[in-house]
Amino acid sequence: MPASGIISSQNCRITLLPSRYTVSIVAFTVNSRTVMQKTNQELQDRLAHILNTIESLEGVIEAYDEWADTHDQDQLCLGYGAPFITCDVMREMVPDKSARILDVAAGTGLAGVELKQSGYTNIDALEPSKKLARKAEEKLVYNNIILDTVDTNTLDIDTDLYDAVIACACFLPNHILPSCLSELIRIVKPNGYIIIVTDKEYYQDHVYGRELQKEINQFSDDRKIIQIKREDRPGYYKHLKTATVLVIRVL
Image 1 (cartoon, rainbow, N blue to C red):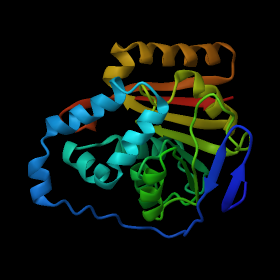
Image 2: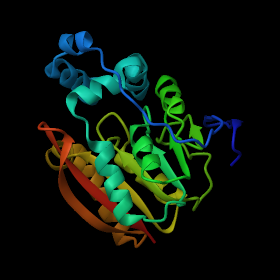
Image 3: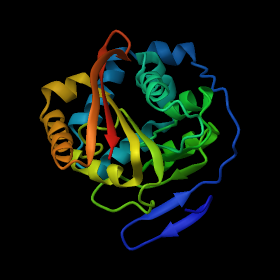
Image 4: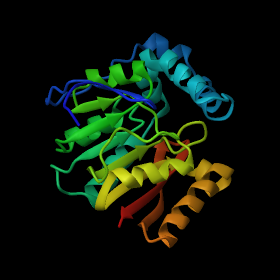
């Protein structure tokens, strides 16, 4: 896979943005007046709309495009902690800071920032929203940014390429289908890891979570993976939501 450029195929178009290989300390400047105008409930309603109301992937991408300019500030207001949890789990499972990592549905790159500041140096991102991908590029933490979706297509990514894939707050309704887990398994090296951090509510109390665990159980039965961790951690959204962490080792 080249370091930059555009790859086209019949099923998908992937854009690789050139890397800058520098660490950026991201400072979020939140305008106090803007914060005052946006209540937590309004932001929660926006998230709920994306997760529960929009009926197509294209619609979800469009919603994120529209949100791109204020996404990080809004998430900060809500106490969004999933990126910190994801990075903590990565440090526990993959201590090698040179490991090749893919941040799936990377959004504006908040998880990538945490990984980079923790010393990881070989991080790629995959994100379908052009505007979110541009925000991620500005953070200067990824070697490559791949503009594509994880859905029914086969990604233009080599088999057994990554030591770890992180999926921070993207195994959710209207985002990545549980059936797409097979494609992530394909691109992870044997003995590599898939780290999923998701909303406990959707994992435990929603049909989506049951379907996701069904996929994991099937691949475990087929001896393609081992689920080595399933636990809850506080702080998915501070004082609002708890995270469920799933760690899978690829065989």
